[in-house]
Every structure is written in structure tokens, then in C-alpha cells.
Image (cartoon, rainbow, N blue to C red; front, side, top):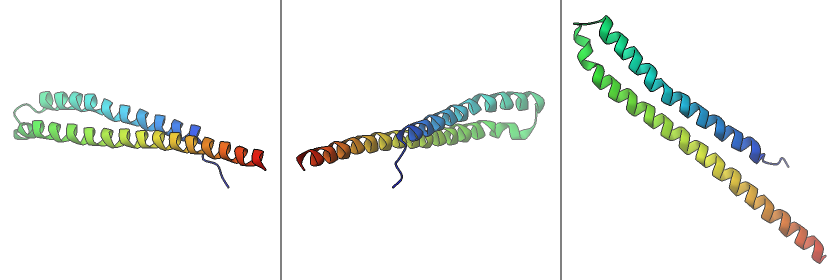
Length: 100
């Protein structure tokens, strides 16, 4: 029976955290793009909707980061639970063997 690799699980949770940080960095990139667009399209009517677009982008970015952070937390929790259960079972097995 294959064994769960809790170290691997924790590394994947760290990878997810790194992705969440990269997603957050996109807020700065979007701000820079909006600034460039405002200066390059002065007088255009669509510029009035940029604030709403920015709000939606920030909301979407936050939802994505929240989901990624929750996934990483769940993976870490499961790794801890599996590791803890594995230790309990190993100790129980050894205790049963010692009684035999």
C-alpha cells in the first residue's frame, strides 16, 4: 500500500502560497496598465468605466487568493492529520506486537 508523503504535501502547499503571492502582484501590474491607459487615451469615453473594472479585478484577485490560501491550509491540515494518525497507528501496532 502506498504511503502518503506528508513532506510532499507540505511542499505543494508552499507552492500554492507562492502562486497566491504572484496573483497578488498582478494588482500592481494592473494599476500600472490602468495608469498607462488613462494617459494614452485621454478624452476617451471608456475611461469612465475603468474604476468599476478595477474594483471587479481587485475582487476577483481577492477571491482567487482566498481560495488558494484555503487550499494550502487544507493541504497542511491533512498532512498534519495523516502524520498524526500514522504515528498513532504505528505506536498501536508496536504495542500490540509487544503484548504478543
